[in-house]
Length: 326
Image (cartoon, rainbow, N blue to C red; front, side, top):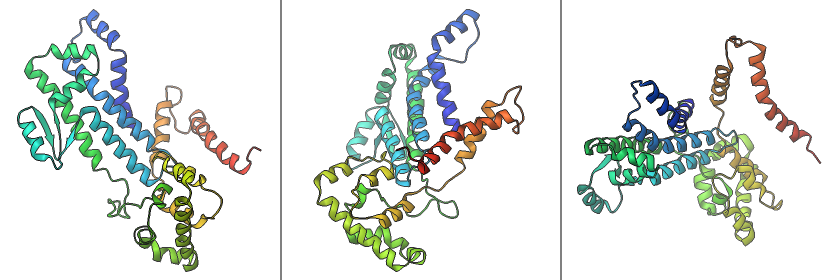
């Protein structure tokens, strides 16, 4: 994540200060590696890198659920597809290939993009970028478009293969965690819920909770389906939730009756993402940024205070749960 943040930050800094930077280079007559091609590519890939950066930040939320992680990545892929107009092999493959034979394009696996669509993306970056592009020879123009297209295609292909859920050997799990948000649960028939959601964990749940409580989960799911499908206002509220709506917020929208505590607790366990090393890596990054000529030792009280100050917000939230303000 840090690499993405620094990479996009560098791109943004270059574009923000490009006028002063170019004036400085020209005044001092320095040989610069910031060529026309460099500036065009920087402008074109900056919004793609920024979209990735925003998604990576969202994925670090502490209360994010497994299904939300998947949908954040899927949303990112769709945004990149729209930005550069990347296409996927589908039922109209023959027509698409016929169109590609008449035009320049780049292909990577099942994804492909026309150079003319990449050119539209470049021109969208403004008059300055458009004028720079026109200064290039035809051969250099194709080379720049190919570089931008390759970057976008590699992003889409790589993100499409991301699998965040791991097994005990840290390999990608064979079966993803089921969708257990309210907008998914009330649409499930009881048979589907038992087979695909409760079934894979049935024996484990009996050992942990007992057969009586596991049976209550089935009963509460049946009650959930009945109350939501029978109330149009409640159904509209739940359907208005998106994948960005947090788990507790969706369940808190339900009325107090019927009680669905066991179903909620079961779904909470299935939806939860286990803690990882991200927080530790973040703390070390903060320490590295805060170190200077006067604060070089990680044991320095001033550096320790940085982390303690960071924790105050979390501690305050925890205290508010025990002492709610009336």
